[in-house]
Image (cartoon, rainbow, N blue to C red):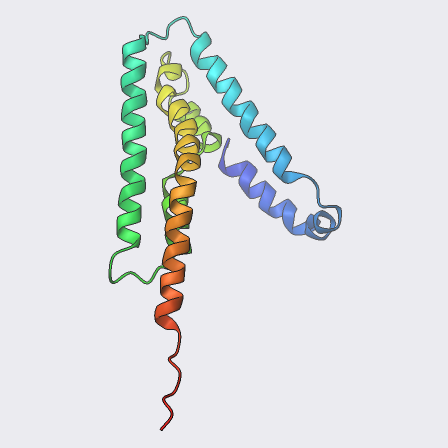
Length: 171
């Protein structure tokens, strides 16, 4: 009810107001970012305002380390699989695969946690890894952008050089 029903209603309503939306062009990007920020903020407040959360600093550091390790591992594995020798993915495809396949959002994760663990007194403790994972993926993504961009540009140039037809030989 929390995730699927609004999605279905949105798809049905979109069909009828699509033309109007294309003419008016509402600021959906700003609205989406604001809603995401609100969800992150309220989840963060709910989690750390709970007096029953028994999370010491050392455990939090370990969780952060584990989350960053998992995120880096997923990104590295997807990069390896998408750049194998027999892969048909372009460098741009590889960048999309690395970032899209490993990035998950709080906007779906938190409602799912609230549905699955409704009434569970340690729900705020369970949401801590997700609260860390989301900013970690943003941070790692922004740190990796220059490296991935230079890799992609160099690969695209190399592919263009290997695909250029050679000039005909004059006799």
